[in-house]
Length: 126
Image 1 (cartoon, helix red, strand yellow):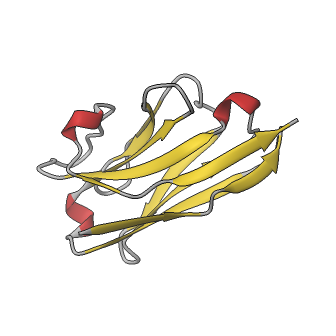
Image 2 (cartoon, rainbow, N blue to C red; image 1 turned 90 degrees about the vertical axis):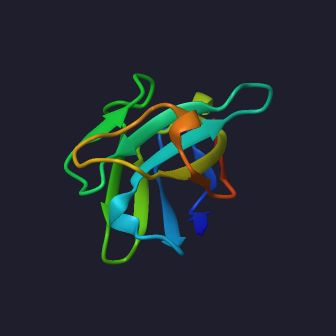
């Protein structure tokens, strides 16, 4: 199983980025997909999650209304659209896949995820 996160980079405060997470080696539509992030000196934190079919999403309060998670099961790819980026959004972003999931559920618990991508770094400057 491989999760390949990409799309990170440097952006100014207020800018936008779209992260992608391409999956291989798993039956993608059977997995909840999640995004987490970790800033230097801080613990990894939940950003958002999307159900197997894409009909249900969940976000942390810190990103709600600014970030949008989506997925394309045919392409086996999950996305994180990040708008109105703030300095405090700077972190390494990780995608993760959670199996053994029924339809229309998500998860904010990192311990429930089975597979993790390598991370992609997002830098936000003023």
